[in-house]
Image 1 (tube, rainbow, N blue to C red):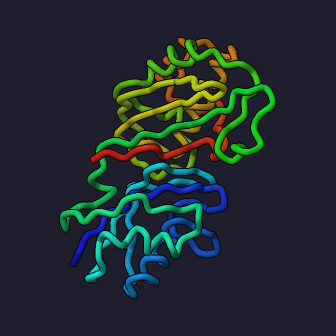
Image 2: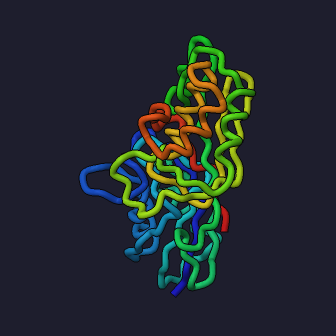
Image 3: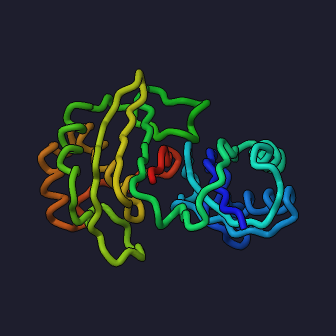
Length: 244
């Protein structure tokens, strides 16, 4: 039995999320169908984590076990030939039998991309969140620095989360300006439901001057969702990297 690891890029605009579900187009199910078409084998694809409807990925990691002699070097092109253009298998590797893409993950990096131009964008409208007001990047970065370290992130999770603990560790929190785009980049050992989108919404309010940077510390310590900013929409969110 072989254990195959995939690095996957996808545009989540038309999908109901990563997870396989009835009556909704999903990324996991589409890739499983492509693998079965190519190899004749039914597999269970295990992702490093779920992404919600409309969320994108540059480097989602997944693995599956399969009993096949199909050549490793031909898998990517064969699988991609059966997939929508909005899903691409970027890399295929054969890994140790005990490798598990979710349980063995140590760090993830998410990016939230904001179009900070005055009029917005037509071409990238499904890949960014538009904020026409010029954002104060320095203030946003100052606020983001309060989030680094191990904290209870209860103020930044949506209700309905299944996680038993709200304690997570953020190793890095950056606010980067790239021409008319602002990228909020967070690296952590795990993320709560909508955590990145709520942190991003809070940072946008700080960037607009609606909150002071120092308020981020108070919001974090309060463990109260009502004090944080709004949950930004999914289209600006990208899973950028997964580390093992």
